[in-house]
Structures are given as C-alpha cells and as structure tokens.
Amino acid sequence: MAASLSLKDVSLHFGGVKVLQDVSFDVEPGVIFGLVGPNGAGKTSLFNCISGHYRPSSGSISIDGTEASGSPPARLARLGLARTFQHPALQLNASVLQNVLLGGHTRLPGGPVSWALRLPYTARSERAIRTEALELLDRAGLAWAADLPADELSHGLHKGVELWRALLSRPALLLLDEPAAGLSHGEVEQLIATVKRLRTEQDITIIIVEHHMGLISALTDRVVVLDHGRKLMSGTAAEAQSDPRVIEAYIGKDAADDAA
Amino acid sequence: MSTAATVRRPRVRMILTAVLAVALIAAPLALPAFANQTLIRIGVYAVAVLGLNIVMGYTGQVNLGQIFFVGLGAYVTAYGVNHGWNILLVFFAACAVAGLVGLLVALAAARLGGLAIAMVTIALPIVGVPLAKRLSDFTGGSQGTSARFTDAPDWSGLDNDQWQFYIVLVVSAAAFLLARSLVRGKYGRAFAAVRENEAVAASMGISPYRTKVLAFTIASIFGGASGFLYLAAVQYTSPETLSFGHSISLLAAMVIGGAGSIAGSLLGGAYYVFVPQLTNAIDPNLTTVSQGAILLAVLFLLPGGLVSLPRVVRRLTRRSATRRSTARPAAETSQQTPPAQHPVPDAAPEGPEQTERQDGP
Ligand SMILES: Nc1ncnc2c1ncn2[C@@H]1O[C@H](COP(=O)(O)OP(=O)(O)OP(=O)(O)O)[C@@H](O)[C@H]1O
Ligand SMILES: [Mg+2]
Image (cartoon, rainbow over all chains, first blue to last red; front, side, top):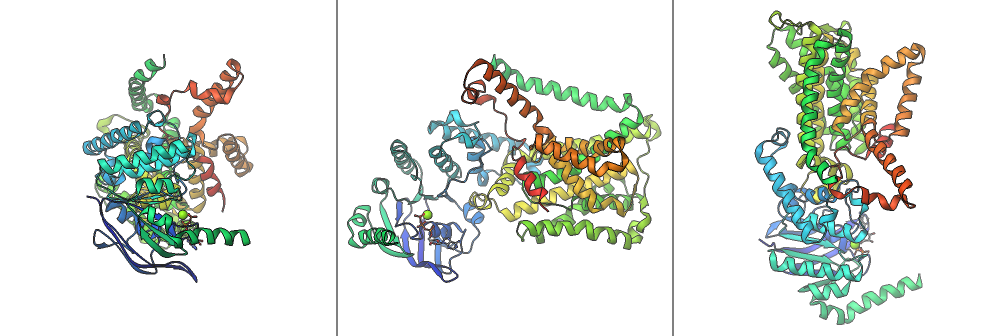
C-alpha cells in the first residue's frame, strides 16, 4: 500500500523569485526519505507542491505513477497522502481527541444527509474511528490528554497530536515537516522510536524534512539535499554529511548571514 | 462522587429531555394565546438563526443574506397554498427552492474569498426587496400576499394558536435534531476545520470549497423552512419580510445566542423575538439605542453568547472556591475537573473571534 513518489524537473516561481528549480528525485515505496538543506532552501515549498497546496510552475510530480501536480490537496489526501505542518496547526479550543479525529475524515463513509439522520452505519463508523483515535493516543501515552483543549498542551505535544492526526488517515505517503523542531532531547528520542515502529508496523512511505541530523541519520534510508531551490546531491545521510558541497552550503550560508 | 455523577449523567439527560418534550407538548394547552404566539415566533426565527449558525458560526463564512431565504421560503409557501398544493408539498418546495437558490449562489460566491462572500450575501436582500415588489404576479407586489392554511381543523378541537404551535414545534424540533447530529461527528469537524484553517482542512481531505457550499446550502434550506413557518404563524408576507435590517438582526441574534452552538440558536431566536418587545416597552422612541446597548452589554459580558453563561458562571464559582481553599487558584483548577468531565466542545468557545469579524462592516 505504501506509495512511490517521483519528481521530474519541478520548478516553482513566485513572480521573479525562483523558489525551486528543476528538482528531480524518486522515492521508492516503503522507504523513509530525508529532505534537508539550509533555511530557505525550499523544503517546505517542495512539500506544498507535493501535497497540492502549491502548483509547480513546471515539471511533474507523480504518486504511484499517476500525475499529482495540479490536483487540489483534498483530492490528494483522499488518495492517501497525509502531512504535518512546520508550525503546528491545531484547533486550539477543540479537544485533543477532536483534533486527532479530523484525520479520520476520509475514512468515514456517508454524506451530510446520512450524518444528519444519524443512520446506524455513520454512528458505527464514528464509534470505530473514535476507538482507534483513543488507541493511538493511548499508545502515545497521551490518553490523559484526550479530552483537554489542545491549547493546554505543550509545543512538543502539539507536534505529537499533528502526527497522530495525520496517521489516523492511514496514509500511504506521509510528509513530516520538521517534526523534531522545538522538541526536547527525550521527545526526539521518542519520535525516532515512533517512526521506527511505524515503519515496521505499517506499509507506508515517509518523507521527513528536518534540520536535526541525528534524527535524519537514525531514520532515513536516503536523503536529498536542497540549497537555494536546487538539488545539491542525493545519497545516504552519512554521504550527505561528509559531502563538501553540502558542508559549503551550510557554512556559506552562515558566512553570508555573518556578513549581513 | 465524581464517578457517580458521570455514570448518572446520560440518564439525567434522558429524563431532562423527556420532561422538556412533555412540557413543550403540554405548553400550548396551558398557556394563553399571546404566550403561544410568542413561542411560535421564537421557533420560526430559531430555525433561521440555526441555519445562519451552520454557515457562519460553525463554518466561519460571513452571511448577511439569511433573511432573503426566509422571505423566499415564505413566498413559495404563499404561492403553493394559494394554488391549492398539498401542505407537505408546499413545505418541501419552500425548503427546496430556497436550498437550490442558496446552492447556486454558494457555487459562485464560495469561489471568492472572505469579504467577497459577505458582499454577495449583502446583495441578496438588497436585490430581493425590489424584486419581490416587481414580480407581483408571484408575490403580490408591495401589497404582499397572504395565505391561510394553519387554522386548526375541527377534529383536533384545538385553537388556531395551539395548532400553529404544534406545526412550528414539529418542524423546528426536526431542524434542531438534524443540525445537532450533523455538527457532531464528520461534518462538524469539517466545518470547524474550514473555519480555522483551510490549508489544514484540505490536507485532511476536506475540500474547503465544497464544505462552504454545503454549509451555505444547509443554511438556505433552514432559511426556507423558517419562511414556511413564518407564513404558518403570520399568514402574510410582503417585501418588508426580507429587508436587509432583519438580516442584520438575525446575525445579531446568532452572535448573542452563541456562535457555533445549537442551543445558542434557540436562545438567538428568543433574543430576536423578546428584545424588540422589551425595548418597545422601555421607550418606543429609543428602540434602536436600547437594542444596541443590550447587544454591547451581552458581547462584553459574554463574548461566547448567552449559551456560554452556565460555563462562565461555573468557571467563576470554581475559581472563587479554589481561591478560598488554596493560595494558588489557577494551578489547581485542573484537579477539580478530571479530564473525563470536560464537556465536548460543541458549544464553541470561538465566540469572541467571530464577533469581531461580524461586527466589522
Ligand atoms: N507563498 C510564497 N510567496 C513568496 N515566496 C515564498 C512563498 N513560499 C515560500 N517562499 C519563499 O521560498 C523560499 C523557500 O521557503 P521554504 O519555506 O520553502 O524554505 P524551507 O527550506 O522550508 O526553510 P526552513 O528550513 O526555514 O523551513 C523562501 O525564500 C520563501 O520566502
Ligand atoms: Mg520549512
């Protein structure tokens, strides 16, 4: 069920700003893939292109061999794509459980009339998805928080809730945008364990954008390094970390920042 | 003690519901005609406010034209009655015509962003009034049109106001039950997701466009149903019924009752009916001023609307109780509310935000 992803010469321009230029790479089904690069390299923009939130200026993106670029994000989500956001976007006044349940939307059958009439199968599917969401929270050690409003949780837990929300949709392709940003050391360890468990238990392809190289090394099979919207190299995490071009991209950026 | 309370809760709820149902069925038999007429009008407007709440309170789409659909429903009802249609067919047509027009408007308007939708919905009553005057074959022109179809049949042994009460009760109870099931579960979460963040909603497989169209269409259908009830109660409609001012009053009623709350819609209906009576009683020359003052007072004291009153009171009493028992009030409150007792947030606490947006133009 895990999906494959293929990008060919994907470019994205905003007016004159070239955010992405001719980015190509393939992600095989079932792998954990890393997307790294200095700030402003275009990683989030690339995620937005894949998830349908941005439409690439040119190039093609295909998921499991079917063209995805140009499809609205809601349709891609129904085809099995899920993502988290760099800045957690939860409904703060809704309960944690309600936030997670949102991820189950595509799995609930029936239209508005059936739900308004509360036909038995809608009630049954709602109960089932609720049980599943509570189980997810329970395994994450978050059962105590299920009924709390989301804004009473810490930043680290917000990131967690976003992840569980995405997982409740049972995605075939999961995009995680900086899942470790702002997490404590212990929380990062827990995240790594969670993703490893996901890989063994579910048939899923995962792409991770992350600055935390420890996490990238621990989890990813392959990485692509972006810099200024271009693909710099691809290989394993270890290869990327020792590649002189990658080191220069990071150091050069710092030097430029210092000069400014 | 707290576990006993949670166990008994559903049963308490069931008993309360049963008592309420019996009270509603018995009320028109016991109350004087004037009281019945007031309750009837509350039911009429509660359904309109309920529809407005779905599109605006739950889904966050500004709709200033709800009264247009009420008027449309009323005119369709008058037309059907005067052409001898079966009453069920009339009701169905009132809902369907309003819903269809709402659907068409929404298909076009939901493509536009935030304020543009508001502008389109403003246009509806503004265009609607002269249109109703012009299409006199259908509407009776400026004179309006009347239709009597809710006189109590002889076999019932009821007075007209009692009979009308039951018609309004059946329709509005059905509307409230349907809306309540809809906003709990899949579609309630979809509405809230679109209101809060369209990009997130879309990434969950929820099409913001379709969701807005759905919410707007539901609001229009409820508007049409409210128009049917309006005619059942008043038996007369004219272009004045759908004037823009009434639309703004409906909106104020929704906010005052509680945006994003089903029970708040009922309170909104009550507000819509009672407040003009109240302000007229105070001083007929100052109605607008005193209505504005009441609106501001409620918004300042209860930004979540009247429906948030019990919650606010509970929070205040809890806070003062903890203040008495411990030195640090805020930190201890969580102990007093074990997670299991947190209410499902269907009476949405988003009131303040909504209010600011609605009050703008
Ligand atoms: N909607 C937009 N309009 C204009 N420019 C944009 C837009 N979105 C992104 N950009 C630009 O694209 C560039 C890449 O941004 P992006 O957020 O994709 O980087 P990133 O690699 O995710 O960085 P970070 O590591 O800081 O999250 C930035 O210069 C940004 O200003
Ligand atoms: Mg980013």
